[in-house]
Length: 190
Image 1 (spheres, rainbow, N blue to C red):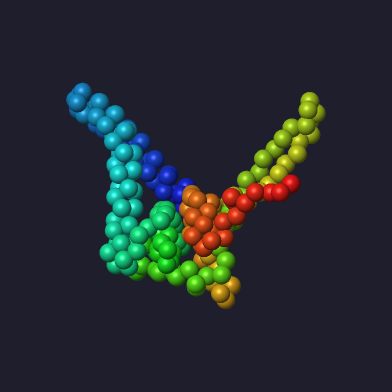
Image 2 (image 1 turned 45 degrees about the vertical axis):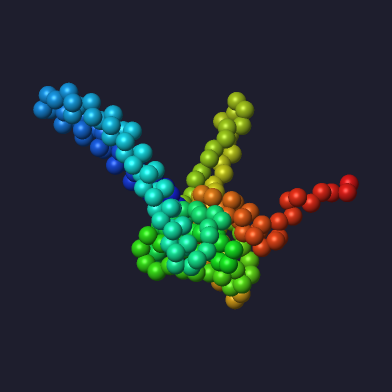
C-alpha cells in the first residue's frame, strides 16, 4: 500500500472530523463562537500539519549538519518500511543520510551503492477501468496494479533499498548531478 494514501486519509479525517465535531457541539450547546470555530479547524489543522512537516525537515538538516558536519543538498520526506516509518532522506556530498522520526540514523556513503533510480513499486492493489466502444454494448476492460513512487538504491551485492517519496525524480536528478553522471546539458551534433 502507498504510505502517502494512509497518511493523507488520516489527516483528512482528523481535519473534517474536528470541524464537524466543533460545529455539532456548538449547535448543541447553542454557542455561536464554538459553532463557527469549525472554520478554524478546517483551515488551522492543515496549516499545523504543514508547519510540523517543515519543522521536521529543518531539524533533520540540523542533525546532519551537527552530527556529520555535512551540508544538505536536497532533503525529501520519505517512508522507509515499517521498522523505521516516516523520516527524511538527505543528500550530501559524502552520503545519503536517512533520519527517521523514530530509530537510528542510517548513513549510506555514495561508494556503498552501485545503482540508483526511481520507479513505481507494485502495491498489491489493482484497478480496473472500462472503456465503451462507440454506441455498441461492448467495452474494453483494463486491469492494472496501483504503483507507489519510490527512490531506490542498489548495494554492490544487488540488494535494493526503497524509499517511498513523492520527489523521487528530483532525488534521482540530484544524485546524478552529484556523482557527475548528469548528461542533460550535452548537445547533439545532428
